[in-house]
Image (cartoon, rainbow, N blue to C red; front, side, top):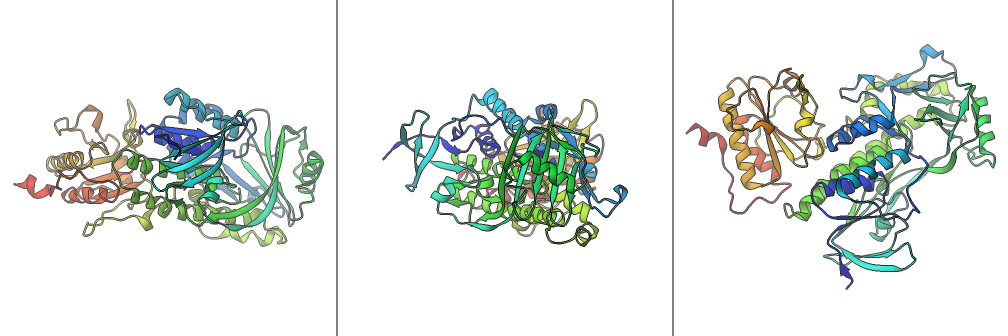
Length: 547
């Protein structure tokens, strides 16, 4: 048997692997990140960060740095050649109900650098480059990995868990025997390049197309523009002189700019694939290793990072002895449908802009369908992704108004000065119990306090309680007590005189919602995630307090 390293092996040092490492390290789980690339990338592939990802980055303390290296993009313009500029369909993200009503444009190499700097500053961790996984065998209680080191030698080490964040050609996925089902849907090339004679509004993402050609263009941070180009034959995508090929396509589409000397060019096959499953024993896959799709809409990197945000706290709970391995079943159950939604949404946009062989005017009807823009921006931004269909609520609980369990937990301003929001209250690695009293405030606060204390006894260290109230005598200390000065939280969670108990998951989704009198159901809900203490039997809150 190989020597055992008591850490999680993360294969892949891109955005997915770095978020996976962060989510484990912030919960005191040791990790090792290996990456076969020669070093940090100096080129950019993915280039968009959407609202749900920015909410995640605000949660983990990175949003402020990203704002310094990104450009805001209000949305997409679809340039149908038979329409005037005023008639062109748009997907305008500025109406989204979030602190980030837009999406960010960023060079992926700059983005990865921000993630690496944060990991090293907070946890003294860096990816190990020129370090390649060459063998992987599940031995039951450990996974034995063969790893080639930068000097050419190999080592065999056993790890309790291995997470494959190693992309479309995932070694971990293949070693785990997981099928990657799908098909090629197009070929595409992209270029980062200086442009002159730009006449379109390059703050937007601009889609240009005709029956047989597609190109989209936008300005990146710095001196370059990003251009994507696709066509059905490969004549332009794989042309030897890529600068001239991009210029020819731009001219045929009437865009008008002049292509300079490219900084970087690449071409690839667009595939629409999803993994048959996300786990085999102690080997898990995450991000592009589990799903890949058309880049239309720019959802790929965002969905991948959200996979890691979902998996991280669950794997940490197992590592720290708070949960059984069965908690990992929820990872595939929750994230695979999201991967399918992302693929469906990407292909819907793909059919509009890359429906080759069909005249553009015959694709326009997609953008005229009722609710098309709202559905698109909510899906692509990630705000509408949810786990409602697979969320298990306790039996017999009274249905309450507001977001459904499994939906994104809305943010809301609580205090204007000094500013405090609901998402500030959630900024920690645990579940959050929000107690929002109604008309019978004193009793509801007492119920909330009893529920908090019960969760502390049964699930120690897993839940942080917070009272949203002006009461200073409610048994919640200064760090766990916030007044509601604006009423936004009551509006967005639809809380009336009846009051509310809310449980927010570590990944910013609503886990459970109930009336204060039914607070015992929160403990029942948590039993699906964590192993309760044997010596801490559940308490039925309301009758005890009424006695």
